[in-house]
Length: 257
Image (cartoon, rainbow, N blue to C red; front, side, top):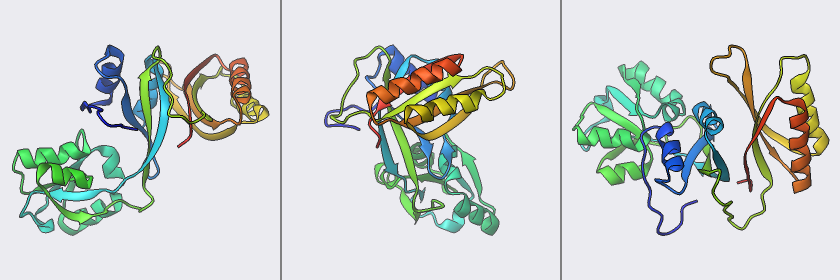
């Protein structure tokens, strides 16, 4: 997604990322939406709905996690492991084994690379981070164990996020995938009717996710991704959803990764 001359601005939490986009501090943001081992990043779905942003592109990245510590530290020295909760969940098997063997605790941290930065900046000799290889090179740390993810087929899906009011950018590919949020009334068969309208339009539903509505117990917003063969099919699918739903928001239309 990133080209030459792009300046990368880090943020500690996802809400700050969205605010930076909305305030014009950055032109766009790259955020993970789903991991093949962990599942969805639920917080980001909520933020997409709450803010006037748009998904412009999608990419897939193979994720390789490593246990990283300060030079001289051995595996037996490690009492605590820090990383982002999503990264920790992708390495459960290894971390559970380490806990059973030597009582090592896995602790959540705001960022993967940030965990290694924290270990090195604070000269921690009993703590390691879970992060990409680049973090070890960047902060002068050592990789104790490489490839600790639960499965080698570990991929994360990322979206390029821009302000909804910005001109639509193009990477030269024709959009064939759409992400949409919709809400249904509490009546029997409403979800079936909504999904039937998508099938009737000839689109291919690739994912559906539900998220609770804050302040309205047991009510949900549905998020769906579907591939469409033509723009006409996408339009028909959205019109069908609107007939069945109390709210529909198109979040992004882009080329499938």
